[in-house]
Amino acid sequence: MYTFSVELPDIFGAQSPKGNYADMTTKGYELSVAYKDRFDWNNSPFNWSVKATLADYRSTIDRYENKAGLLQTDRYQTDRYYEGQRLGEIWGYVTQGLFQNQAEIDAAPTQKVIKSSNSGIIYPGDVRFADLNGDGVIDYGTNTINSHGDKTIIGNYEPRYIYSFNINMDWKNVYFSTFFQGVGKQNWYPSNESIFWGQYNRPYNNLPEWHLNNYWTEDNPNGYFPRYAGYNESIKATAQTRYLQNIAYIRMKNIQIGYNFPKSVTSKLKISSLRAGLSGENLWTWSPLYKKTKDLDVGNLMKSDPDISDSNSGDGFNYPVMKSISFNLSIGL
Image 1 (cartoon, rainbow, N blue to C red):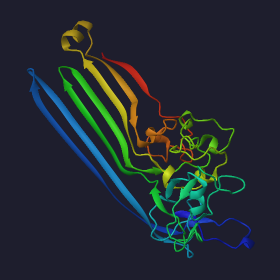
Image 2: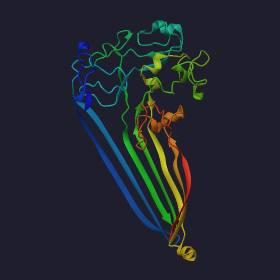
Image 3: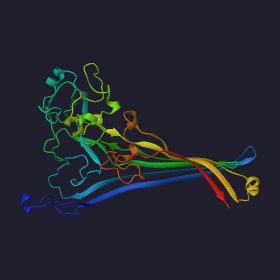
Image 4: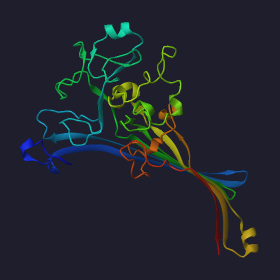
């Protein structure tokens, strides 16, 4: 595993060199099932087939030079691991909703990790974290595997249960096929610069339409987002369960329907074959993320779609997968 080496003293004067300083074990499986059949329908043969695939894997760090057991300071940091870690772990806080009034704030544990204002003061409408270790303070301890305060593993950004299936049918010169592909389980937490946060990142950013009337106010206490405040570090820089996104999805990658003209037609045209059809690419996608927003193409997040080579830090800044419908005509001479 190619990573940075152990931290060197500052007097060294340079960044630690990269090298193979870790051992990792990956276990998984791939399954493929196919079935074909044929029967007569209206005195003509009806052919159909279906094929499905399923793959899954989990990677575990067996060895890494991290004697102090330091945890990642960034949820997607790739140069700090610990023995026994599942690759892709997202550490964060358990959110208990939003503070509704000052009385709830006064009665809650001291929230050292919240930074929703320059003054550091907590206001009604700010996020409320759970005191998991019961010490009366919300913090991350020494940010090590043995002392992580109220941080816990809240998700995993590695794709799980990667699947696909396709169906093919033909009858009386008419053919039909479709192909679906997807991921059964995967988490994503938007980075600081993600358009997911809109003006919660910077007040001069674009305002996503789905943010409107979807944030906390006294008249809207059940808003999804906290009170409106730019540079809100308590959500965009603090991974937590409330804004952890489920980016499992299913996408119709391709669908085709067409007609093979019979010999009675092709012989008159003096050609060997003639086929006409319609084809659609990426016409439909569903994901739990789309219950909140469709501003982001789910396939662009964390490289979950194998047809996308670069997801630009996992925030979907590249172009979305394009939908297309095309007419095709195949002539055999």
